[in-house]
Image (cartoon, rainbow, N blue to C red; front, side):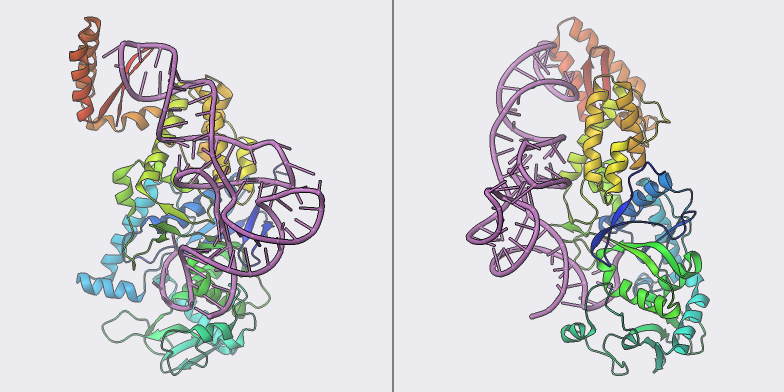
Amino acid sequence: MSHLPPLRLHNSHTRSLEVVTPITPDNFRVYFCGPTVYDRVHLGNLRSMLCADILIRFLRARYPRVTYVRNITDIDDKIIIRAHENQEPIEALTHRTIEDFHEDLAALNILPPDIEPRATQHIEAMLHMIEQLINRGHAYVAEGNVLFDVRSFPSYGALSGRSLDSLRAGTRIDVASYKRDPGDFVLWKPSPPGEPGWESPYGRGRPGWHIECSAMSQHYLGDSFDIHGGGSDLLFPHHENERAQSLCCAPKNEFARHWLHVGMLLSNSEKMSKSLGNFHTIRDALDHAPAEALRLLYLSSHYRSMLDFTWEKLDEARRIMDRFYRALEKTPPHKNTPPPGAIIHALSDDLNTPLALTELHQFADAAMTGQQDAADHLYAAGQLLGLFASTPGEWFQGDTASLDTSKIEQKIEERLAARKAKDFAKADAIRDQLAEQGILLEDGPNGTTWRKA
RNA sequence: GGUCCGAUGGCAGAAUGGCUAUGUAGCGGACUGCAAAUCCGUGUAUGUGGGUUCGAUUCCCGCUCGGACCUCCA
């Protein structure tokens, strides 16, 4: 491993590029914030999951053991409201949404985390943490709520680079009167009858949003771990609050050594979000283009920059995948080649996937001319990026079970006969007819092949 | 209002104190009965005003514009 370039990542805590050195090299520990399961995830949510996927694949190639935890928030006001609107039990809503979530990510070839803890299964750990925070003087009970006392943690604001006083000046919402400081946030709040709740020393209630991540990361990864990531919109207040809770419980520790934040996906130059209504679900995108085209689109911009989603860009990504698969079709790769150094190098530099993709283009050009090593490199590089899960045949012809391939072959024979007879009008008519059914013909030196449009 | 990030060719997008990627789209050509695919060729860019420097797209400052966060958000 010593010959590999060091992995450098941008740490949003220090706002600089840093060499990542694991706390314990025998177990590289990563935590990413997962979804709140009240509705299907959309293309914006997907971006951080996909960024994490690239990071994890790359870490697994470099370290003997990687533990990747991604949580599921399955208790939250939005869930309660949605379940009420749908007139269905909360468990039915969360169960269905989680299944959809897994299905969507699997379609994108996003590897599952090693551990996917759910908030409702870790209430006890949260209550334990809340108790510790109260005992240490970092939290207080007020009107049935337990609140974190931000003034008790001098380093509050250090992660997101803001001061409590500047926050106070900008507060736009009504502040509950029982808060000691407007920045104090809920660790535990009462649940009225009819809403989900758990018994606790503070009465029947449910956890605040931030405490679950502190409790679950501590439970599965310990008081200090290597990378904590999520969308850049989580930096404040979510991650700032997590950090405050965790460090107040375990003051001698680091909590997360390295903070990674993924840039927002935009739609018409605005953040794609449910509240703005400018979102597309993953299913929408998959109806439009293959999953690997979507993956390539995400890879084509750096994870920290914003990515303005358009259908045109998705189409372009699909054409690029077409070319990669053509290259692999031309020169079938050997499957066990290690990823080429240029890719390792690009990813080592803060996961520079756009730079890595330029290398894929070079390999594809060479593979197109029949160079075996280039095809091997193209394939191995793509594998590291989660691409080329299909064969070229599957890519171009799709699920042939749903098509009458013998009929297509028959039409191709008919057209061939027409061409031999110089009856080009008939030959073109057959081609047009197939095109209407979404079948494109290509006359190559080795005969005519077909592919799906 | 506060904090932060960004601005590179039609679009996407790297890199770099001097040699100006890469892709895609466009255009021209080869190949083809015609297409498609493939190949060859080709034009266009560092928001703006200063500063540092022999030299700035790159470093520094101002300005403009865009976005995110400050409220649930990936």
